[in-house]
Image 1 (tube, one colour):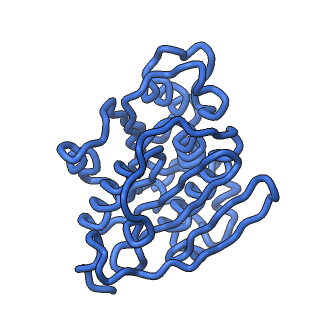
Image 2 (tube, rainbow, N blue to C red):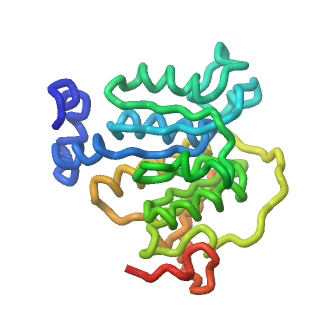
Length: 246
C-alpha cells in the first residue's frame, strides 16, 4: 500500500488513468537491476528513483574521474575519487528516501552475474561494452525477465526492449564483440537514451503503452531525428533460439 507521503510525491503520476494507485503500487513492488552507474546509469537511476521503483540494485566497479563529469550527472566534482555506486547511493537516497537503493561494487562477470541479478524483476543495460551486454542479455533470457538495452556514441544513441519468449534479443541483432575503446560522447546523448530506457521500465511494470520490442529506436542528435528499425528473432540465436515463443 502507498503511504500518505507517497501519494503526495507521486500525485502527478497517479493522476494518469493508465497509472493510478494500482500502477504506482506495481512500481513500488518492482526490483530493478541497473548495470552501470555512469552516463546511462545516471539518468536511468535518477528517473526510476523519482518515479518510485521500490528497489533499485546498482552495480558498478569504477571510481569517479574528472573525465566522467561531462555526462555522468549523478556524480559531481566533489565526488572525484569516490566509487560511483557510493556517490549514487548518496544522491538517490536524498532524491527519494522511500526507494531502497542497494549497491554492488563489482565488475559484472560470468562467475558472479547470477548472484548479482538474483531476485531482480528486470535488468537495465547501462554498460559501455558488448561483452557485458551479452552476459546481461543471456541471464535475462535464462531468468525470464525483461532486458532494457541502451547504447550511445557521440551525439547518437539507440534503445530496444527485450521480453524473453516474446521478442528478439540483443544477440539476434549483434554478433561478435568489439575491442575496448575510448569513444566520444556528449552528455546529452546518454541523457536522452537513459530517459527512454527508464520510460520503458515504467511502462513495463505499470502495463501501459507499447514497448520497444522488436524495434530498435535510433536517435541522431545532429539532425534531431528518431528512426526505427524492425528487428526479427533469429531462430538460430545462441541465446534465445531454443526458447519457445509465448
